[in-house]
Structure formats: structure tokens, C-alpha cells
Amino acid sequence: MRQTLLSLAALLFSTFLLLLGSGLLGTLLSLKMGISGLADPLIGLIMGGFYAGMMLGGIVCYRIIHRVGHIRAFAAFAALSCAVIMVHGLILSPWIWIVLRIINGMTMMGMFIVIESWLNERAEPRMRGRVFSFYMVISFLGLGLGQFLLNLADVEGLELYFVAGLLFSLCLVPIALSRSVHPQAPQGVRTRLRHLMRLAPFGVGGCFAAGLMFGAFYALGAVYGTNIGLTTGGVSLLMGVAVLSGLVLQWPVGHVSDFYDRLNVLVLLLALVSVISLALALLGDTGMWPLLILAGLMGGVGATIYPVSVAHVTDYVNQQQLVSTSATLIKTYGVGATLGPVGAALLMALIGPQGLFLFIALVCAVAAVITALRRRPAEVAVEDQEPFVAMPRTGSTLISEMDPRTEVEPEEPDWSRQEEPNTDDHRP
Image (cartoon, rainbow, N blue to C red):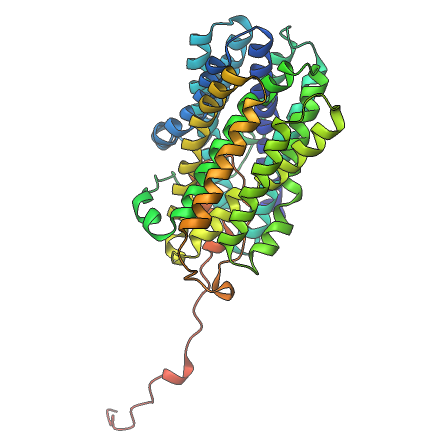
């Protein structure tokens, strides 16, 4: 048991370092492009390439890991990620950066597949819920704290690229030094989007809307901050507060969604994010504190839209379908996260930096209205709903296997159905 906990601690520490570097790199690149004067639509296209790369990596990286093994594949992905980060620092070319972001998304997906398949293999059934929770907390902490690393050096220099590359390199160490046996080679998960759309269309739509919203904010939040005159410290504070706030409301909102109709909760969440985002778009020059409070509320409430949507969809599927269902919803989120930066950037180019939050407000308002007006009467009673589980929005489809809802409880034997001994058998 002690060895198992130690091996899981090493994997979780690798995850933290990986997401710390990723959180720094994403905001750094967005900030650098904004300062350099690149057009907002081009920035959105470049940053959206990362999510496109992650989706592509979900296809390619499985084959690489299956062929060379987990540790070798992880080492290759980490080395390639470091090289990509350094090239970002050496060359500022939009078209080269698009390719680099796609490659970085693929390598990130490969590393997530390795880490998550290892966690799935090593986590004992009675520890799955805790491991899943730790993984989610570390995901938010890594991405959130990575924003504050922007203050270590000048954005115009190369030092921050070195810091990001250093973190990507260090995340390899716990994996490379692990004495654990290789987990089983990961298998691809069958996509069942059409089936889910028939069962729970508004839950699937909620996942897509969450991808549009957070894909746009993570990609262009730093550009927004630069355009309204924030310093690098101000941008890091804005992004850090928004990301870390996502951890705070997960369990309170989840508790509420377990006792009320989830579609009603989802409509309320979408409406709240729409109102808060509209307030951010109309905020004007009122100081830093109102901006941080509203951004924290948007990040905190918005971060619950995806897990509530997933919980609603899982209410309509059986336990054996939960893994593939969750994996399909992760891909749906990824499609939204790829398109969100492009749509928000086009609106920013038309009306200014407030276009980012106006885009988020419009996405959530449309999703809320459609869900409220076209929803069917509840078919799943509140008491029959699956329990809410807070979901990390990063990682591969393998993380769905750690979802505590997928754990099948062993059936108890029915002693009343045991056959009576055959007293007519007179064999010696």
C-alpha cells in the first residue's frame, strides 16, 4: 500500500509540473502576441491550434505509446515539448507558431495519456475516488499557479520560455525513475456522439458551450488584459484568479445539482455566466478589484458547467457506458475549445477587447435560452440521478476511467436461490 501511494504521488507531482508549465506557456504566448501587435483573429487561430493538436494527439499518440512503451513515449513527448517551447522563444512567426501549437497540443495529449493510464493502473478500487479528486485539484492548481510565474521575468525576454521548458523537463523525472511495471497499452474509445445527442442533447450542448467559453478565455484572456492596459502582473492576477476560482465552487454546485433537476441547474449556471460576462464586457475603467471579482465569479461558476453537463448526460446511460460517454464529452469540449478562440477573436477585432466577454455572454445566453425553451419534461427523477463528480477539463479520454461513477459494485449472492441438495441421488 505504501509503495502504491508513493508511486501515485510521483505521478501526481509530474502532473502538477506539467500543468504548471502549460499554464505559464499558454498565457505567455497570448501575452507576447498581444504585445507584438498581432491581429486578434490571428491570435485566436494560433491559440486554438493547441486544442486541435490535442484532439489529433488522441488519435496519433495511442499508436506511439502502444509501439514503444509508456516511459519512452513520455520521454519523447517531453523532449519534443521542450524543443517546441524554445522555438517559440527564438522565432515570432504566426504561421510557424500555429504549427508549434498543434505539435504542443499533440505532445501534451501524449503525456496526459501516459500519466492517466498509469494512474488508472495503479489506483486501487477503494482509492479511485480520492485519486480522481486529487487529480482534479492538481489540474486547477497547476494551471492557476502557472499564471503567476509570468512575474518571474520580462515577457519580451527568453527567460520565461526557459522556465516553461524547465518545468516540462522536470515532469519527466518522476516518470523516468519509476520502478513500476508498464500499464497496459491504452485503447481508443468509441465515439457515440449521435446516440448521446438523442438521449441528452442539452447536456452535450453544455459541454460544447463550456469548450467555447473556456477555450476563448484561456486563449485570449491575456490579450484582453493587455488591450485594457494591465501590466504583466495584472494579467497574471486576472488569469490566476479566474482559473483558481474554478476549484472553489465545484463541490457546492455539485451538491445542489444532486438535489435538483440538473437541467434547471444548468440553465441557471449558463444564465449567471452570461450576466457576469456581460457585466465584464460593460465594466469600463472602474479599477482592478471589480475586474478581479467578476472574473473570479465567471471562472468559478463557469467551471461547473462542464461537470454538471457531464452528470446530466450520465443520468441517461448505464454504468457500462460511462467511460465511453465521458470520453465522447471530453472530445465535444475539445471541439468547442478549438472554435472558441477564433469566434471570440473575430468579435474582439470588431468591437474591441470587450468582445471576449461579450462572446462568452452570447454563447451562454443562447445555450441557456435553447435549453430552457426546448427541454423535455424530466425523465430522470432527482433521486435517481447519478452523483455529481467534479471533472478536470484537461487530459485524455482515459481520465474518464477513474470516474468513481464507473466503479461496478460486485453483486451479492442471493442465498435464497441456492439449490436444495438432491436427496434422491443414491449413488455410493
